[in-house]
Image 1 (tube, rainbow, N blue to C red):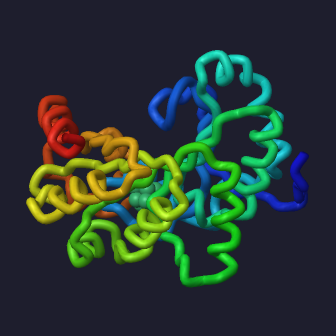
Image 2 (cartoon, rainbow, N blue to C red):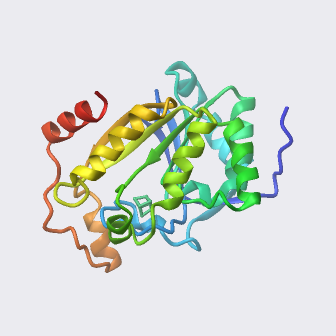
Length: 248
Ligand code: SF4
């Protein structure tokens, strides 16, 4: 039995009951509210605002999850926290994952890893969270720092430090990379991604996700300038070829 603090509330954007792309099997996906990145290709800009979303305790979320738990267990699935940036709400996710572990559910975090590990308190919370996490999906947007700032509005230093830390902790990790032709596919970035995969023993694979236009309507609705509107969506062949090369 874990010690659960049921007073901690999480700010949540939405739930997906039968997710199949954010970790193994069928999953309950919790999209957390709030993100400090401003990725030009983000298809969930409505998760950015830290003040928006609905508040839930971990127990309330668990009650939702348990309605469908038979599907998650039978499919070797589980729960995934995504966003937004879930690691902005470390304490809440820790409570939720403790409850999930009590129910024998597999736990996954989908994150851009933008957290400051030089902060002692943050590191302590991360260590506790890793103890109840089965899989990390770490999104790397661009390996060149200047280009990363242009693409996301923030440095990639925290993300790269987080990747190193996950290796130290031997945390099973899938790297995720959204391939945007002509934007984040320079040779130095692709070479670095491949190097990390070869060097870090905890990396299961690099998953390449194609850039798509499905979130464009949200940018329009929210009145945000879409700087990538003339960039074409990636083709399946481009994505498959790159994935094979990166994982060789
Ligand atoms: S980190 Fe994720 S949620 Fe945040 S802006 Fe980038 S794609 Fe959107």
